[in-house]
Image 1 (spheres, one colour):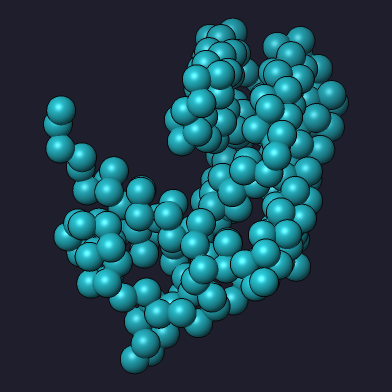
Image 2: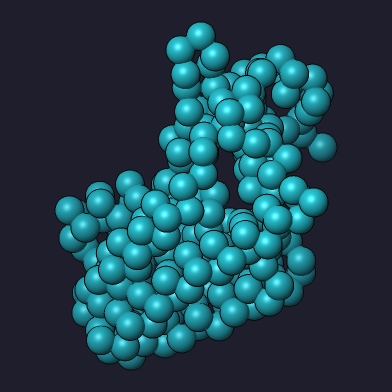
Length: 223
């Protein structure tokens, strides 16, 4: 078996730290010491540094003078606002994709959805999330609108940890698949209005589920 790459290590560290933040094990203001984290995972500091930079990009961590990287205060209100904007952006992407996607692009979208189903049925959680995110990316790119793609991709990067985490909510992963199937059908049928409504609702629900889940898990962590 080949040795995991730094990217693989960085991804593992990033996801683990995301979980610690969302579960309340790492409180706002907690300092992320690269040496301590590297020791915890038995790796070098390079992938840890990469993981921390990714967390900074997503807004979960911030760099402070003389303190280094610290856990940022989680602003649930702002997060919900981000999902509200994202639901409109992605809804518009789906609307344009239903009009503009080529037959080949629609086939690729269906293949990625099938791959998501396979990963879900096999219990491969990380692979399932990756395929699920790819499904959204294909819908964004299928809009064939460079300005819209740029705006949506930028916000999508900030929402990555929140979207990943909300899939842990009981029953949410299965609901996510059903939503994607309905969106896929609307795009394949070339129905822009239904595609818009389904993806907009899908993304709005993600924000609602995350806010509810983080409230529950945060409360438990404080007990």
